[in-house]
Structure formats: structure tokens, C-alpha cells
Length: 164
Image (cartoon, rainbow, N blue to C red; front, side, top):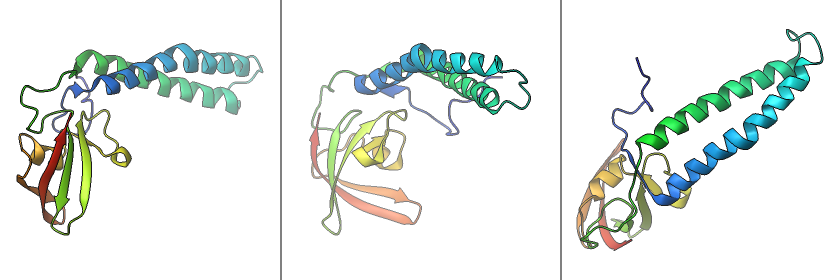
């Protein structure tokens, strides 16, 4: 039985070209740079003798398992992803890849970009298309009021601008 990619119920297969490039670069780095370095370190540690008490050897083997696990995940995930590299026909509505500015009831303005679950980054304002905020924003236009269900209640926002 295959393990799910994430612990979420549903994971969208969409990604931006930038997100796909980052995942591909990570895979390439792990496979072509990091893994050979760790393999060399493990070989050197193994040459030192008793492996059962050799911390460098044990740690190196653990690192190799982690690298191999991430390589398998990235290889599988990259083959499943759908790269969204064009703007929608109706750019006045919020769709995947949009930069959206919203204003809350206190007048605070926030800016989000709707991206795939593999590339979300709260510090950059990137929110996953699977998040409650993104789901509430999809297909909205400027001036629309959006109600977002949050763990501590609901929040109301107004869409102030949409850019691609």
C-alpha cells in the first residue's frame, strides 16, 4: 500500500514554474552533490574500523536514509505535478498563481499569492491553494467580500486588488 504524500486529505497537484524549478534544483542538489558527499564520508568512516561504535558512520548512514527518502518523494511528486504557467482567460478573478490584496474589517491590508501546497511560505505571503483563505478567495473579483473560517471563528475580508 502506498503512503499518502502528506497527512492532508487532499493535496492539489498544481505548482508554479518557480516552485517546480526549486523542487527540481533541490532534487538535483541532493542527488548530484549532497548524496555523493555523504557517501564519501560514510566510506571514510567505515574504513576507520568498528562500525558499531563509530558515530560518524552511524550518522552518515542516517543522513543517507534521509536523503534517499527525500529523493524518492521529490521524484514521485515532480512526476505528479501540473505546472500552471499561464494567466487565466479572466484575469479579473482570483485563480491559481494570483497575487491578491485583501483588507480586513480593521483596515489592515494583506497580500497573498495562491500557490501549490509544495511551495507555500507564510513569510513571502504564499498561501496554499488548499488553505481555507485561498479556497475562500478563488473566483472572487475586486470588491467582493470574503468570509474565511478560522479556528477561532470567522474573519471577513474585502478583495482590493488582483494581479498575475
